[in-house]
Image 1 (cartoon, rainbow, N blue to C red):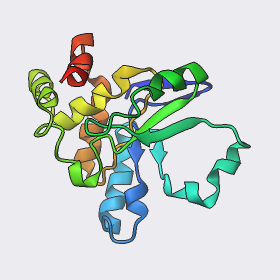
Image 2 (cartoon, rainbow, N blue to C red; image 1 turned 180 degrees about the vertical axis):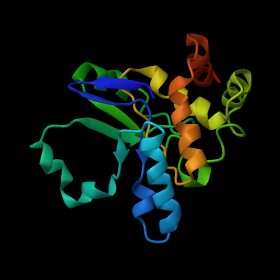
Image 3 (tube, one colour; image 1 turned 45 degrees about the vertical axis):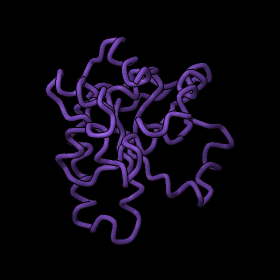
Image 4 (cartoon, rainbow, N blue to C red; image 1 turned 90 degrees about the vertical axis):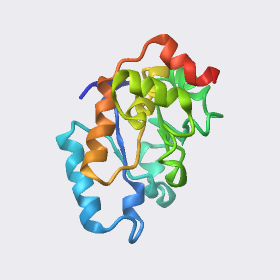
Length: 175
């Protein structure tokens, strides 16, 4: 697994968004545990549980931010300038819902033609291409896709090995 240095911290280039696993019944406990156990085996060192934020977890850092987490995906691009801002501040940008959220998780290849075309050219899933496209925008970006199936975790972490050209990074924005 490739890593990214963000300030003094080195983290896996792809994280795991585990918040949905903390919601009762979604998914079931056995599937959640299987996904969590697959993450370290795939090289994931950053597992985001986001649900702790509403319990005051931000106070642990003494008011300092280590990262910014906002939605960013092919369907939701208004957070597009934030990676550059985070880079300048030396903090991580953790795009949550990198596929557009649960209701749009299947869309990267069907609703966004550039993702499907580029993924096919690299012989990878559109999801893997999407996860490679997001951090290609800045060295401080670590996407945190939600995944509970081991095969989904492995496909997601494979995005760290996918190198996109500058044209492939720009093409989805131009579409």
